[in-house]
Picture 1 (cartoon, rainbow, N blue to C red):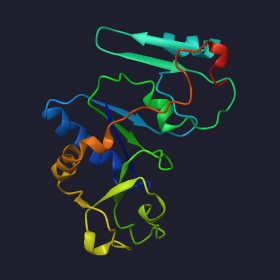
Picture 2 (picture 1 turned 180 degrees about the vertical axis):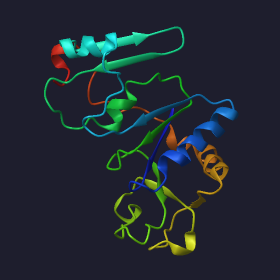
Picture 3 (picture 1 turned 60 degrees about the vertical axis):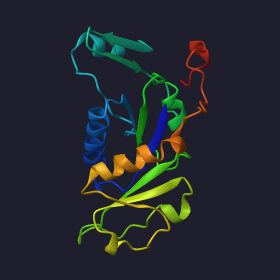
Length: 193
């Protein structure tokens, strides 16, 4: 499995770019998984559905499965420190070709920084690459307007195929060897609660 992170400030267009990157990788016959960082109170369940009712009744895990998909929801009994990108990657099927991680900007995974000029009514933002050695490239829609010119490859956000081409040309740099910090096969007592 190859693992790569995409980081950037909220509103920079990470999700839009990743939709295109995922589609292009799939068109080339590659299997892709995604890890997305979310806020504390997100929910993927629908109130009133059986799985939601099971969780609200106190189930630690609810696994919902059909012939087309599977979803595992695990409840933590107390607020947890954020799990790492490595913790999340350990949960994925290791046979996928690419694992794309959106968010987790403080992770040590190799990543591409997504940069767009903030709108006039937004506060200026610092670029991450000068302080993050894991940033290997910067994807932007206007390289001339970058606050700092990076000594890194510049990728064109308007041409997502250039991002995919760069990823594939540098695939060996993204080979994931794994660094999980929790054991997904441990007893429930050992899981964070």
